[in-house]
Amino acid sequence: MTPHTYLFDPPRWQPARSLYPRTGALFAGSAVWVVLYGWLGYRLWTDGLTPGITLNLTLIGACIVLGVLIVWGWRTLGNHWLLRLQFWRRDRWGGLSLDQLQNLSPGEFEEYVTRHIFERQGYRAINTPDVKDGGIDVLVFDGQGQQAVVQCKRYRGTVGEPVVRDLYGTMIGNGATYAYLITTGEISNAAYLWASGKPIELIDGPRLVQLGRTIAGR
Image (cartoon, rainbow, N blue to C red; front, side, top):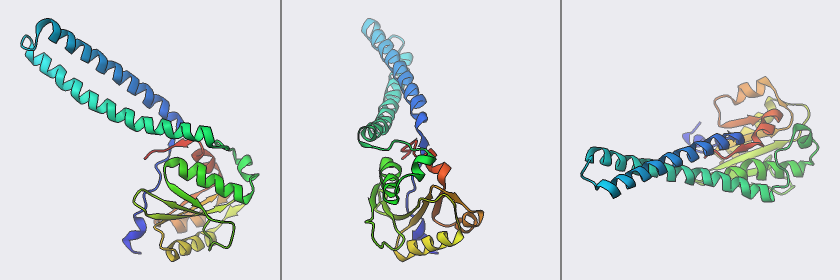
């Protein structure tokens, strides 16, 4: 297997609830920065720089370092919140339950995977037309332009090893660097064993429900 098959940058899914403690921590850090900045300003206003210069220089350094970290943190976290707000406004699904996913039509299920699973993570995702597509339901591109292929199986049963083998062949045949098998059903142990060590991610029904409630971790 050539090294290029591992270049795709897979999503780093994180629970949506992780936004709240991170936001709280940033608020606390910002409050500390304001206090330090105010203390420094008060000292400089009343005494000037020279008296207690060691403490003043320490406060200046702390304000600079903490300020940079806070700006970087709010920028990163702000992007996550903006992405969530965008999908709150236009995502007609939200995080669906397993029963709801299984009741979607095949086309709706592919659209859910495209928009709610991959686009919400910041990837460019294309739902291929409902025609003969060679086993590819969704094409996903990362920030470096590497391509992954996605096969969607709206099943209630178990997906076995032959499906994973076919998907791997489809990935190689299309020059993709990663592959996803996403199903509302179960995935057999043989399929997991065969995919082990290969650039393939297998996502069964319960995990798909969980991923529908995640945020981008990029």
